Amino acid sequence: MKLRYKVIIDTLGEFYFSEIKAPININKPIEHREAVESPQKVMLSERMEGNALFMRGICKERKVIEWILESLTGYTTPHQIKVILIPENNQIPSIEWTISKAFPLKYTMPNYNANADTVEIEALEIAYDQLIRIK
Image 1 (spheres, helix red, strand yellow):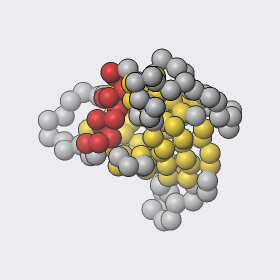
Image 2 (cartoon, one colour):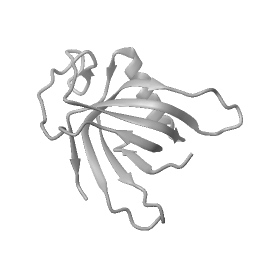
Image 3 (cartoon, one colour):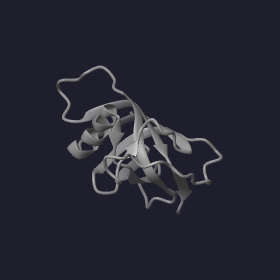
């Protein structure tokens, strides 16, 4: 599997994906309702403006996996994500995006592999408020 994107979640860590799909019309931020229990958490039943689908990836960061699994409880903390395209020749990255107020919506894992020290991700759907190309 060729991993073409490095994904950094602000304070949680990083993971890598081979493919990312996102809608074209993604520049309009929208308002969202905060959860009553905690002003930092977003109620997952409220849909945000865009969704991105991260496909075929790996992650070694425990905090990232905990964040993904926390979303299954119905509440999660949104984070800012930076996506970096890894060039074919491994030179300096030329394209980067930031995704604001992002949280996981759906997580699909492939078959288990007891010999790997990473968590594989078949698909991870992320909802977000805004996606901006920064470089």
